[in-house]
Length: 392
Image 1 (cartoon, one colour):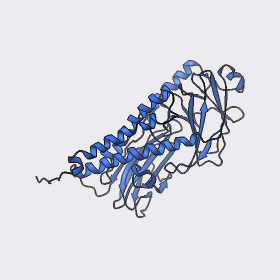
Image 2: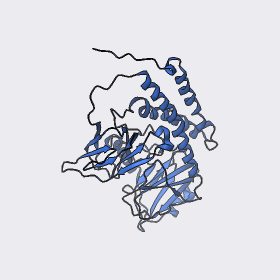
Image 3: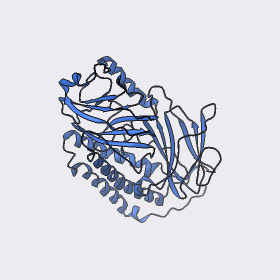
Image 4: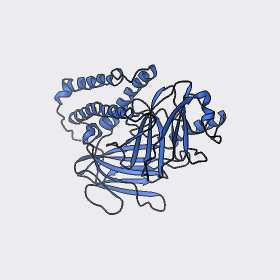
């Protein structure tokens, strides 16, 4: 057995790189304590949780799983690691790639409503330079549900997604409409021609990854904070639809703010878009999806119950108002709303109006769908059970 001599990396040896990591982590507290809108105990508590989630979310994409020679599909968003307003309906994976190599993404397609693979230049740690290269959402699938996608910088026959000439990444998304019955994909990525095992860990590689971690913790939270400010720029009583550079270009994103005291309810009304997929979800001040695994904080076009006039009416309230389309505010008296319309023929604008909770029944159509307390419990139990089933 031969051994390779590994020279020490100066910034690791003298501890300066780790001190920079520690300073970067310390700076994160400004996202909570220097934001004037984070002005309630629940928001500060949520903020502290968010900071730990940022660190936990950054590590797999920088320190542990980011290797274009031996890529892995990293599930970078879960109910407990969130940033960048993930859709409650979506299971997200990411992997490192490089244009010098050819990769195979393969496995069982599953039956999720939307199935999308996109490639980008660079890494999310340098978010401003994380530019789209290619995106595909329609692939040939065999009779057994198996799919194989080639990822390379040069054209390939069959299912092919072009990747960046140099360092890059892919994002693999599955959007579910029917959480209880659509089946998750079982996919794997591999570099063609890779030999195993990978080379041993080196000081240089650790130093590079620590710097990537530092860059991620500086750039990604800052971009999310900027995106949250746009919610407060929406006209009162409706949502503002804007593009998001690092999000899915086929989706129109609506951003808005609701205000709901404990004795109030907010009625959201919209004519649903003509679209393969649409959803409305409540969002934290830190651009997270609000605890969607335990609470009904989101509804998509499959889950929504439309009124007789074809309008989607949802009720945002802190306590269950016994209507089917309840969106659980969960003690957030000021909250954010995110709408997603995928390949929509138009952009219908949701309208918001605040009413007293005691008057709610008189403000909704007579035929509004209602649920009993037991039915709500069944819904929420099924919602929670869908999380592991969808491999979220």
